[in-house]
Image (cartoon, rainbow, N blue to C red; front, side):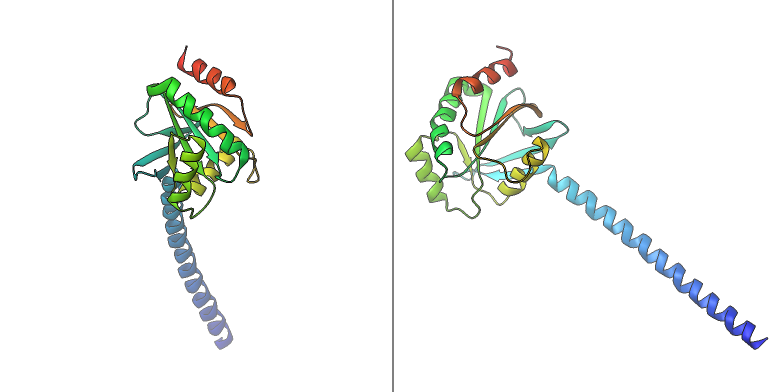
Length: 193
């Protein structure tokens, strides 16, 4: 009988600790779910800082990305590097498009270079005529990775990479040097012109 009592006691104690363990797992699962939800919310917005310290908020939508406060405009997210010859060559074309389409287009240059001094971006702007918005932010790489993921091009894509969006929907994207006329044609179609 004492063996039976000892065995019953051991089983009861084991079950008691098992229940505590499951409760803790449930609590951890709830915390993990909350953390994942917060992370998901965080990944849906990207706050980018331009060279003149203006903040731009890019929001991830179901079909692409949208610039907060730019409803009806075409947005070009230009992923580039200051040392990249095709990126240097496209800068004047993007500036030309920004000028041509004025209030219907917003070009944002997003550098892949982490911790780059603003002075280097300013020199790029002056040397290659990049008169559109250039952002230098800790959020750049996170946004770049999300764009690459959304475009299904992997992490080792070629630059320049331009992604065109209107109201959160992808219009088209280009990898490598692209003729200004092709980009202008897509902008006109998106604007209904």
